[in-house]
Length: 205
Image (cartoon, rainbow, N blue to C red):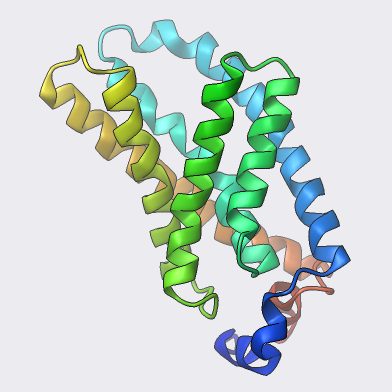
């Protein structure tokens, strides 16, 4: 299969952590695109609220979309701060597109990005395989799940809060972890990621 990305990180040494102009530009473009997706997803979330009136925690199965940019940014750019940058810029763009509660949204973007970032950092930005992506998605989802239960769901029964948290994490694993990983692989196959290690490795598959 693919060569382990550890080798490319080692070749780069300390300089591999430096952001190139292309890294900044592409990360920003990806973030803006996801900001638009966020705005649309927020509208869909609000539209479907009545369908979950009987059991509100069930709507958490949709939550994973909010975590995709951080995982994708990390997997694509493969530099310290990429996951956080893409997630927080996407959140900021969504605010400009009309998502309410701007301070809360941008804060959530920050902590969600950091959730994914801490996993990539734990692997020293050297491993980008599917299990790492899944773990990044899980932790990125765990953070807002806990915050939501504290800030917004405190009146719920404990069973509802636990159900909500579990569903958020599962959704994040599937949509952000597996989905983000699959998206990077699909884009790499087209050749558009040639300037990045993520694209060059896929071309050798």
